[in-house]
Image 1 (cartoon, rainbow, N blue to C red):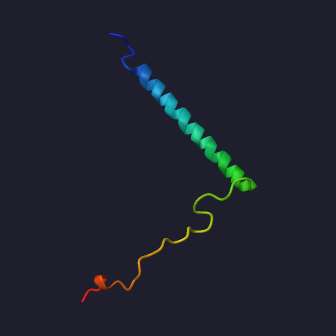
Image 2: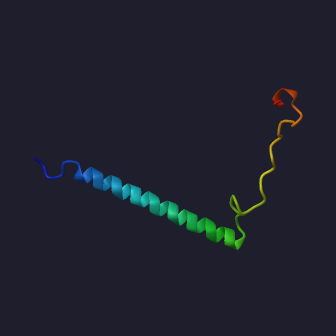
Image 3: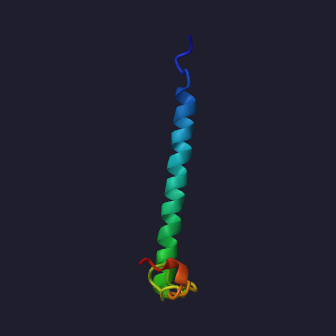
Length: 66
């Protein structure tokens, strides 16, 4: 019986996941630096709040509870 029995595959998967995590971390760091430099607009939560959607009218006679 080989001593690898899936160890190599697990190791490769862990390495790919670690590389993807590191890549996302570097991308976040770069975006933060670009926002600080004014190259990118502020991200969500930092800008103006979104416009409210049209709400249904409050004077709906069917929704009145007596």
